[in-house]
Length: 312
Image (tube, rainbow, N blue to C red; front, side):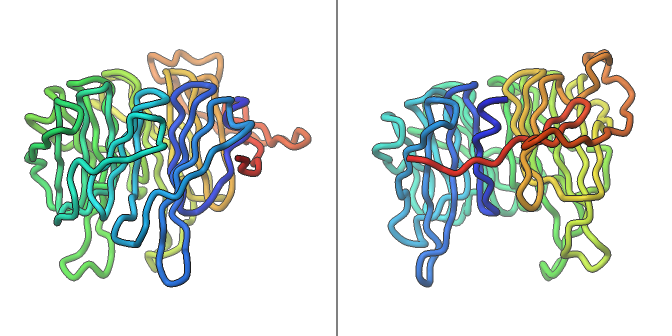
């Protein structure tokens, strides 16, 4: 909870919590005529932040980052794939500009990691990024999010577009049990546009989704889908008509954080289910009442976290 209360929400923000004290934030902000990437890190639960500019030009903008400990992290985007071994003080290129246009990266340890991108692209490494090899996804969608629970079990989400790329046609959810040697499609159980995925073990995963109006541009609500059987079945855990849901991050089967449009942070300590439900059985979802509690707006099992200013 304390870590979540300190997150500063920004529309172009990606975040990762290593545990209650250590976290990273990636932001892409406009600078003159270009966008630049900035990486912030905290080691005290968000009380203070250290921020460094990552990119020197728009060509080096990164869209995603991941880390396995406070020192080792990876970033990926238009400029390629980059790595740090000193907590973000210095970054080295592992793979420079190419046609990948990476959108997401996920590592489960110091050696095993995956990067996804445009046109169904998936790259994998088993040596910490010294070499990357392509995996066959079987789709042509823009893959946007990846979450591996271990070196074998992983999930990828993406968005399909019409032939002329003028409109979205739906979401794609892929799963693997062999480290990406083979990928198979799963049914996410929702028509919402899936905006993020977070998995903590081979069984437990969560999806965030946003419903879009008929015109295709304005978020009209959001849903959280959850599975406790590795994606064989997904059940709606939470739904709101107030805002779209843009990102979520779970660190174990009970503790998770969620970003909602335009500027809300939600947190749970019960895996997102009512405290008296059987989480492992994915208890039946029920409406979640809001109540105001000073600076916090509380849910029965999701708590709205306070927005805090970035420091450092």
